[in-house]
Length: 430
Ligand code: UDX
Image 1 (tube, rainbow, N blue to C red):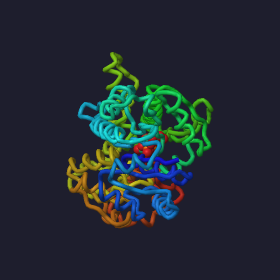
Image 2 (image 1 turned 90 degrees about the horizontal axis):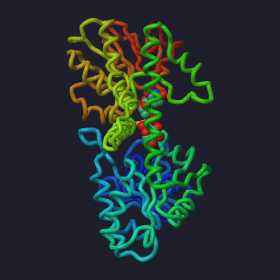
Image 3 (image 1 turned 60 degrees about the horizontal axis):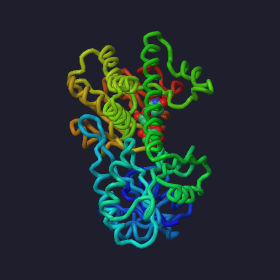
C-alpha cells in the first residue's frame, strides 16, 4: 500500500521505515527541511540501532521517499499517519497544538484530493482527542464527512527508543481504533504484513490502551523502586527479590528493574497527562499520581547516598557515567541524569560527564558540566563516580579503568557494572 507518515520524530520515522521494510511504499513528510534532506540522503536524523541502514536500503529499493510537502505526501498515499509530537503543558496536561495544525492542514489537502483516503492518528493523544479535535478539523477544512468520504483510525505505537525499528517490525500486538468498518479494514490490511494479533476497537479505547500500557509499565517501575528503597535499608539486592517476583507468570520479569527512576519522552509525560485527563473527568487517579511522585524523588536518592559517603560535595570532582535516559539512544528527555547532575552542581561539585552517545544533547541542558571522550578520562582525578545509564560498554569496565580516581566511591543508579570486573561499588537499591 501507499502510506504517508506526517512527522518524522522517533515514532514517525521508525514506523515509516518499518512499513517500508515490510514492503509498503512510504513517503515521510516533515516541515523541518533539514530532517527531510537527511532522510533523502540516507542519513538518519536520530540515532536508533539499524535505522540508518534500513533507510538507505529502502531508498535504494524505491520504497521510501521524503518531502516537506503535505500535499505531495497525501496525494501519493492511501493512508496517512499523524505522527506529530504531543508535548506537555506546564500543568502536565497534553498540548495539542501540533495535532490541531496538522489536522487542519490535512483537511485542507483532503478537500482537493480524489478517491478514498484514511487518516490514522499515531501520536499519543489522550482519549477523545481524535473525536474531539482531529475529526472536526478534518471535516471542517475539507468540507467532507468522516466515515463516509474519508476514513479515520487511531493506531497507537508501542515502540521503545533504542529498539524502535525492531519493535515496529516485531510488535506484540496491533491495536486499531476505527471510526467505521471501512477505515478499520484498510488499516488491518496495511498491518497484515506483521505477524501479531490485531485488536479492533473504538477510537477512544485505542487511545486509552496506549496510556494504560505506559501507565501500567511506569507504575511497575515505581513499584520496583519502592521495594528497592526498602531492600537497600534491609541490605538486600532488589534484583534478587524481583527475580523471585517476576518468575510468577502473572507478573512477568519485565519492567521490574529498580534504579534512579524512569525517564524518556513517554512515561513521565504520558502518566501525567492521564492523571490530568482523569481530573478533568472528575476522577483523581491517586495510584498514578503516587507513581509519578515516587519517580520524581528517585534520582535524588543517589545524590543523598553519595553525600552520606563523601560528605560535602563542594569543589569535589564527581564522574558521571551515562546521561541518556536509557542505553542505545542519544535522547536525554526527562533523563534522571538531568536531576542528578543539576543537584551535584547545586552542591558545588565539579561534574566530569561521559556518555557514548548523548553528551551532545546533554550539554544543551547542562552546559556547566564538563564532558569527556571516554569513561577513563571522566574518571581521572574523580573523588567519586555515579553510573546513571546501563550502557553495555560500562559492563566491560574493570578495576583498572577506575584506577585514575582520587578516591574510590562508586555508586550505580542502574545495574550497569560487572561485579566480576569491578570491586567495591554499591547500587542505589542494592
Ligand atoms: C516507552 C514504552 O516502553 C513504549 O512502549 C512506548 O511506546 C514509549 O514509552 P521508552 O520510553 O522508549 O518506551 O523506553 P522504556 O524502555 O520503556 O524505558 C522507559 C524508562 O523506564 C527508561 O528511563 C528506563 O531506564 C526506565 N526503566 C525501564 C526502568 O527504570 N526499569 C525498568 O525495568 C524498565
